Image (cartoon, rainbow, N blue to C red):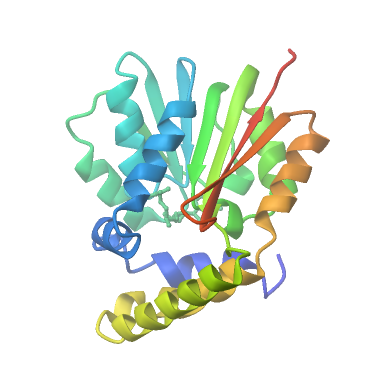
Length: 227
Ligand SMILES: C[S@@+](CC[C@H](N)C(=O)[O-])C[C@H]1O[C@@H](n2cnc3c(N)ncnc32)[C@H](O)[C@@H]1O
């Protein structure tokens, strides 16, 4: 990992933010986060589901609610996020949370759907997809969602202005200050979408890309069509 790796931002963004994350993600995306997660939910199939970088477990619980007879595994690298996830999921008997680095994934089972919201930009595409492939059943899907920098100039200006506002708000929420400053730079410089499409194709997946909400984020679905 180079010192400039986006992975270095993970402890900076997440070590001290687990308690406020749910509120921040809801308000900072104007409630769109929930719509994006529902969109992911519609694409999930099968009996075994892995939520990578599950964070506080927002998506994990939505999956567990919809697929009540299945066991859902949530994996995250940040212990404090997993603590919140476990504490908020006590009423769910079908969720198992595991502390692991997704780039070093080792779960003793395979899954029909592997999903993740907001992990792609922090990880190396080839490494993550290779690990996912090792954990994917035939006909399984990998569904990845993350922020993108819109390509329309007018939307770009709006987007940049929004992050200036967010940076200002960050002065009043010190635990989020680093994230509000660094996140727009990371999104603007990230080639995660192209990198994951190419990694998925390299491993023989059938790939579909869909942009959402003025191209401010995208979902990639890669399906393993053979055995
Ligand atoms: C923005 S939060 C998203 C949480 C959740 N997916 C959601 O949509 O609400 C990003 C999460 O990714 C986790 N993360 C980042 N890199 C990771 C890695 N290599 N392995 C596992 N988790 C990782 C962080 O710990 C953090 O909880």
